[in-house]
Length: 487
Ligand code: NAD
Image (tube, rainbow, N blue to C red; front, side):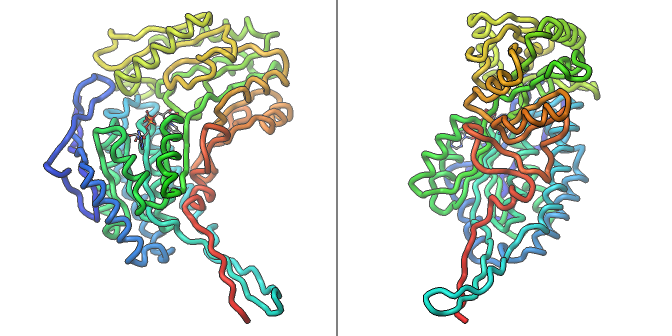
């Protein structure tokens, strides 16, 4: 298997090694072997990146040059597109993406998403005339302005690294903020290449910085607690999201959180192509490592047996179609790490102990190679109060829950601490009535796309706070100022 060039830090406009040339091994999920080296930032490196971002925000006109930033981001966009093959290789080698999944969500989803944000940018209102108002006996002309928040710490996970990096970094830079990107320890190369391309695009020093680190928490905690950082934009687990809120409290950090999910895939009894729709609910794309993935299948009791049969066929038909590194149509590879494999396996054991019936899969697959492979897995006869129905597994595991009627389906869908995504399949009017009542941020009716770069994305309840992507995603990085001029 190929290897990747060393992932370097990008601080104050320069690509460089970490202090003392410290590096760590980037382990590839397909083989469990080293696919590259990455700079292992020290606390001093992190502090320098924060200082550079602070300096660029406070002492340059970056935040007020709205058109210049747009032109620069367009140039950066072109460079990202021109490097699509390189990005694809990184997604495959370090994030474990299969080619069929890599082209879609990992790379093209991110690049097209960037275009969506660039389209939204002209909609930002930097200044609004709020008219003249007579108050306290005299007239005041009022203006409301929207300005960049300041220095942003962007902390990202490993599952779709380019997608999440772009969603945060581009929106924050368009808004006029300066940014320190801290990728997950498992996916440093996808962060580092963004630094390399920033150099090529000619970004001013300090406006964008990238720090990679082997330690899961050190750099993220420094960003979260440092008073020089104004906002943390975080995507990752709900547990770490809560820690970030706590750690950010002493400096009253603005926090934006994209967290976990356990979304529902509801098939109504009148869904056209009922069996085919049910078959489409398999959790296999990128081995189920997607936050908005609908991983709870809700099917009507009246058609439950039919649904189980359809799933049995679907999983049997898929048995030989996953885990192929070179196959262009393959959409499922390994999970990211040994740790994640063990975590998913512990949920598969738990599901059996809880009394759910294993319809398909359930085993790690060492015959696929030395990487982290788990069979596409499906549990039926699941109750929504089981832990496998309540907790995010983040692996190729679908749980199937029967429901009585529409009301019951809505109740089950909402009976979750999460509220990120969801899908309903059925006659349009009925499905639409249901999605209005599901407490989640991105809902699909009959397979429609609710997650694209020009639409806001984010969670209800413990799935997060705030919105990313689209106009709302850029506005997340803006402050509001009211100005009164006595006339
Ligand atoms: P994680 O929460 O362990 O780590 C995410 C990031 O936070 C990493 O960069 C990590 O180094 C950093 N981090 C860890 N501890 C920290 C701390 N104390 N302070 C600051 N930063 C810290 O999550 P993960 O294992 O990398 O990713 C999987 C999780 O991410 C899943 O739960 C998944 O649902 C979630 N996720 C959510 C979305 C979304 O948009 N909602 C997208 C992708 C992944």
